[in-house]
Image: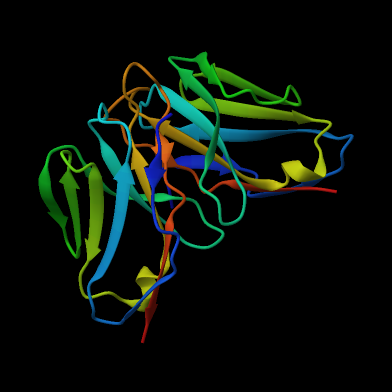
Length: 114
Length: 112
């Protein structure tokens, strides 16, 4: 079990649906991240939150909308996704954003778009 | 652009042997490097962090960092079939950036 908890573990949705991915950590970390990972590829950074503020948006399409309600929670709201968005979505946290900080990953949400 | 290079493998070693995984990086400014293990269909798991030149040992794992040559390696002693996974090398953020850089990973197969 990891200290970063993601729900749901699996999600199947149609292209017109709206759903949310959730991530929670209780390690006191002040940086949280969303990654997308396709099979046999490294994780691809999507968003970085530092002290609950969005610091990095790696040119992610607007159909992905992140939200950080507090220092322990991170959400990713999904709307009108495309089949190519099917992937493993990983949440990670670190003590702070920036150098010298390892990231701790959750188990991920396996997302399938029909 | 920062790059982290790894041979994608697969690297195949017999059980009990030493597995040697290598990684080179382009950004001399980074001070931190990490090795993650990722089983198929699972999330990356941090197994080693290294910040200084030289070796760092943790159980069967040894990370080696050579900043002058810009490479990082991971040695796994007494390899077990359960070590079969993809190993991701990551370079920590540097220069005010919040963005770490991952290599594409090396697939390791330990056969009985």
